[in-house]
Picture (cartoon, rainbow, N blue to C red):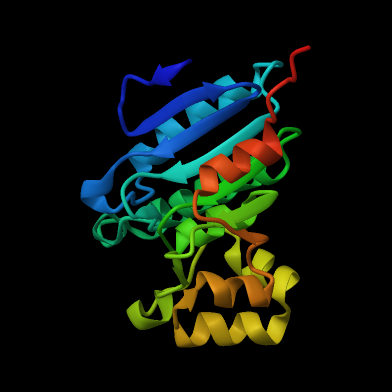
Length: 204
């Protein structure tokens, strides 16, 4: 699956033994809508079956990594549909967290709400210096339903995680590094991730 897939919502490029997966819906700030989830599930399925791919690198287009769920879409869901949407996202993120392949979030821009939940499900998180992180749900009267409330406290501690969720404050990349939310700040997260996850084979 070298090159963009047919949907254009998610682009995939094979680099050595890594697949660079780019969320490509800048008009909606890369919202992880039901449609985007559909394509992401297919991409993950296809790449998981490829034994020559060792690393999955996720990144975003323009200045956004992922902005989480589409709020307008959420307001149209009834109770059962909302529960199903949440559970589906949880299962997808858990598949990524449990993948035998190395998963890297190469965070190129804004990483908000469910987008941060997604990054937390990856093995490594590498962020550009311009990145901002937030869980803005408290300002909207909602809370994330894709596993962030479990993964974040394990990563940075319960007290800091509660403060982060309750205040909806934004963190810079440097702040996130100090907290232990991310592993590295790098000018080009994808290129850094490729060096870590798929170094070129030397020739002699």
